[in-house]
Image (cartoon, rainbow, N blue to C red):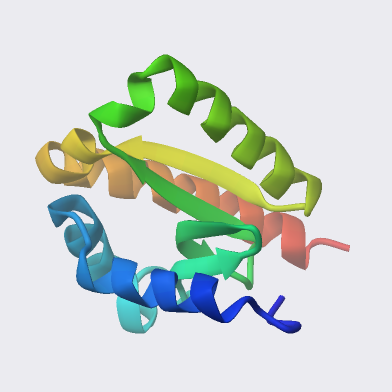
Length: 126
């Protein structure tokens, strides 16, 4: 995925790590360093032309965290196009609201566990 990556896109992704939301920081603490099901997750991963919040290459999973701006008309269409693009690459995209990550962390992690378990079994079955 890193073939001749746009340096500005990479720099922007780096800057997004430093400007992470509370929800992103909380989830990152659970995902980083193979803490979640021993999967390696990356944050603010460039999948050109997009930057996704979290990405696990091993199981082809993209995790997006959404604030209230994602409920606005123009953004809804943009998100739908992003999802369509990423799914065309064979990736699975899951989305969680920031307020759920912050207020119902256990529910989000339980859902994520089920998604990861299903994707892992698809990758390992013949």
